[in-house]
Structure formats: C-alpha cells, structure tokens
Length: 283
Ligand code: AMP
Image (cartoon, rainbow, N blue to C red):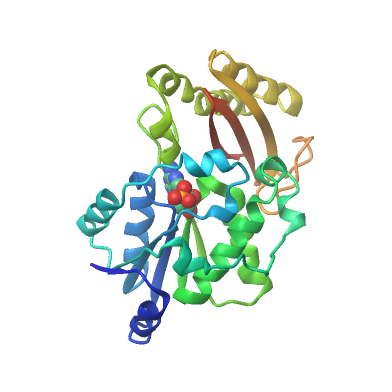
C-alpha cells in the first residue's frame, strides 16, 4: 500500500493506472468504510481511499474540532484489506492557502433533510468531492447510502457535468443492535450508545406499521419520533419520508405505485452527538 500526501505525486502515479475506484472518507475508519474499500477493490483493478476531514462541510465549527482522528490505525486497517493507495493530504496541500472561490450548489436536491438543517454543508461536500474527482480521476467512486442525500447529489453532479465516473451507493453497515456505524459513535458514552439504537428501531417499527396497512405519513413519523425520544438523551431533529430519486418529501404514501420504494430518513441528537440514518422501504 502506498501513501500519497501531495497532489503532484498522485498525478504522476495516476498516469500508469487504467481503471480506478475511489472511496472518499474523513478517516477514523470503521467497518462501513472498509466494506466500501473492499467493494472498490473488487470493482476496479486499482483502489484508492482518500482521507481528508473537509472543513468546508462542517456548518458547526465545534463538530469539526471534535471530529475524531487516528491516522496510524486507519492506515493499518486499509493495509490489512489490501487497499492499493491512500491519498491523505494536509488541509493546506489539498485546499491551498486561500479560500476557494468556486461554489457548487444543488438547491433542488438539498432544500430538505440534511441540506435544510446543515446550511452550507452540501456546498462544502460538492466542492471537495468535485476537487477529489478532478485530482484523483477515478473511473468509479463509492459512497455509503447511510449518507443518502450525499450519494444522490454526487451522482447528480456527475450526470449534470457528463463526468464518466460511475457513482455507486452501497448499503449501510450496522452494529449488531442495528446502529449505523459512524465515526461519530466514538463520542457516545455508555448510556447514549444504548439509546442511539432507538433511531433504527423506530424506523423498523414504522416500516412494519406501514406494511401492516398504516399509510398515514404523520402517524408513521410520530411512531418513529416517539420511539427515538423514549430515550431520555435523544432529541429528534427530523423524521421524513422522501422519494429516493427526487428526495422530495412525501406527505401521502397511498398514491405511490406498488413497486416503488420510499426512503425513511432521520436525524437526532443523542446526548449532543448528531446522528443520521435512513432505510429504504419497499412498498
Ligand atoms: P465519512 O468518513 O463519514 O465522510 O464517510 C465516508 C464514506 O463512508 C461515505 O460515503 C459514507 O456514506 C460512508 N459510510 C459511513 N458510514 C457508513 C456505514 N455505516 N455504512 C456504509 N457506508 C458508510
């Protein structure tokens, strides 16, 4: 495994590579990241994992400061699964000294959900992913569906700009009790960690209610919210049903065709740690 810290070094390496899978991450790796990295390896001859904590996508500066870092462990994990390259630039190397002037926006897909509650977040994501794509020049890129809206906007960016990058969304990897793996889980204390799992549990209970015939969106959202907030440390930010392509919020599940799937997405604070999750429900 080769560790690459500068853009110039990567550009000269890139010349000798044909098909290339990129897995962008912010480090502090867990099984969710590793499953993307393994999938990337299986889908292209060469794989590169990038590690860069993107300051531009943190709307809350405290969240950025508290973001966990463990470079040594990350590199060991990636080596153990046979990753070919790790691109791990410093902030100065990757972003330069001056604030970038370019702004990328996608209002139609970011007006709700994460985009609504994290102003500026997707501008930061789109800029950094566009820059990674421009520097790394991958043929495929893998993203987790845990961050569904992120996966969706990145795929749209490639469509809109006719970039020949196959953007793949991979299923969410979970702990045995259902909690979606996240680097932020490391900040949960013992009691919070127990209550964090109520998000997934709430969504599964609502899914069952829907399959049992309850199609009242407000009712189903209330079910999820009540389960989450049965944890004394939990505070819901949003619970929404959305269309998996347009990401528009759904207020009526009755009119959707039988074959369709819907997304149920949640965000909640668990003892000050902001967690997000979603499930795809077949109707
Ligand atoms: P992050 O380091 O949190 O920016 O995540 C890097 C990539 O890993 C993103 O595409 C995430 O969606 C993905 N990811 C994070 N957690 C999970 C998970 N539990 N399962 C699958 N993919 C994940």
